[in-house]
View (cartoon, rainbow, N blue to C red):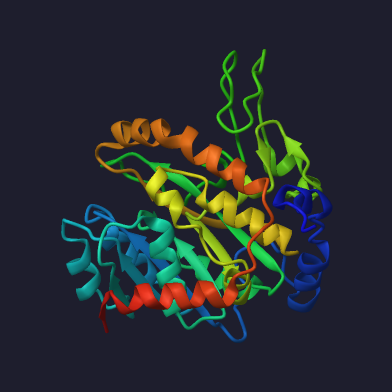
Length: 332
C-alpha cells in the first residue's frame, strides 16, 4: 500500500548542512550573506498577477535592476485593471501570458512554470519588490535537491519603505502569536505570550524534519510562494500546484506544494538575505478578512490531501498545463 503524504513527511529529515556547507567551501562565502554570483545562472521568475496595477511597476522595475539577469514570465489571471498592459509594456518582461478566465494563482504559477525555460523557477508575488542582489543570491545557491525560501517585509500602502528590508519583519523569523484563542494552522491554544523565533529556534529549519513542529509551524508551512526558488524538474515531478485551492479560497496551495516536495526528498533551506518589500494594497484590511474567511475550507482540503498518497503525475501535469496554455493569450 502506498504511504500517505503525512507518513512520508514523518520519514524525511531536513539536514541541509551538506548543501549549505559545500556552498560555503566552494565559494568561500557565507550562505546567509549577499554575494557569490552564479557561474551559470539559469533562472526564470514566474509572477502570477491579478489586479495589481498599484504595485506591479515597482516590482518589475526592481527586476530590471537585478545584478543577474533572469527570464521574467508574468501570468495575468484575467485582471480587469491595467495589470496586463503594464506587463506588456515593461522591458523586464520576457513573456506575458493571459489566462482565459480568473483561475487563481495556483493555475497561474503552473502555466508560468511550464512556459518558463529556466532550470530553477523563482516564484515571486506581484507585490514583492526585491533588492538588486536577491535573484543572484538564489541562482548561486540553487540546488536540484533544495527548495530555497525567501522572506517579506510588509509595507503599508503609501508608506515610505526603509532603505533595506528587514528579515525579522517576516513572521517566520519573528513571531508573536495570539494568546487564549486557537492558532490558525494547528489549533493549539497558548496560555501565555511567546516571543517566537521559528528560524533561530529550529536552527534554520534543521529541527523541523521528520514531521516535527514548532508551536504552529511545521516544515511545509515554511514554504511560502511570496519568494520561493524550486527546481523545475522537481516541480514537474510532484505535479505542480493543486489548482483546486483557487476555487476554495485563500491559502495552503504553497504549503501543499511544500509537503509534496519534502515527501519527494527535497530539503527546505532559508536564504535570510533574500528579503523583499511586500507592498500592501490600499484595501489590505478588507482583503485580509476575506482571506481568513476562506481559510477553514482550504485547510480542510489540505488535511485531506495529507491523508492520501502524494500524486506522481509529472507527464499528466505537463499535458494538462500545456492544454491550458494553448487557450491563453501569449505576448512576446
